[in-house]
Image (tube, rainbow, N blue to C red; front, side):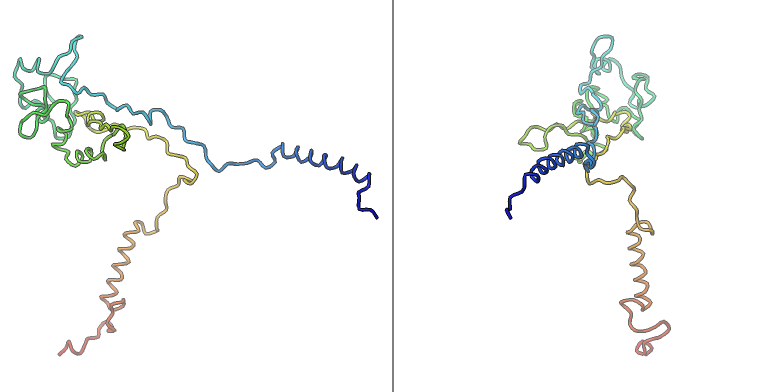
Amino acid sequence: MSGKPSSNEGTVRAIVVPLVLFALAAVLYGEPWSFVSPVPLATVVPAWAVDETPVRHPELAPEIGFAGFTHRCNDCHKLFPSNPDAGASALRHTDIVLEHGINTRCFNCHNLLNRDTFTDDSGGEIPYDQPELLCARCHGPVYRDWQHGVHGRSNGYWDAQSGLMTRQKCTACHDPHVPPFPSMAPAPPPNTLRMGPHAPVEHLPGGNPLRVSQSSHSKRSTQDVAGDGPGETGLHAGEHNSEDDR
């Protein structure tokens, strides 16, 4: 017998194979097994969350605009004496609300003799464009953190070789008369592949795990004293060493 396929078999193959391939292509075109990507959608970050503009825009000069003119503080204050005890009840600058803790006296910060400057601990002058030196008088640890970039805001480059870094001054965020920072809406969190569901973390039934450890340590110490722990001497309660009775 010859091993060559007959003409009928060749004809069947020529018809069946294209039909099978066409049917398979039609099934795949319908996407019966749709692909579901495990990568979540990227978080939409609002523009305000990455805005580099400071919250406040303080004037770093002792100037005030009034009636279309710009005046320096000393332009008025050098004409009349000021009350050294002036505080929240001052007759002028009634638009200023002073809520700075127990610091309710104007001249704790402003220089009495030169109103274009701030005052230091000895009554000397602090330049008006360096308010951080004034804040450092009472907020030393915060000022130290600000110097090292831990507190406050930095714009620019962390790598000094790539460019300059600008440290925003205290008044770019805090109102010096009402320093508490106002509430702000938090930016949305990242939505990464490995974050999983945002569910609260369950702790041990006893509460703080450190307290549980401390409690266990206290129990072991009590057992050691009673002779039931690793430090037991082999004597039970009520027994005495004969040498101690001598």
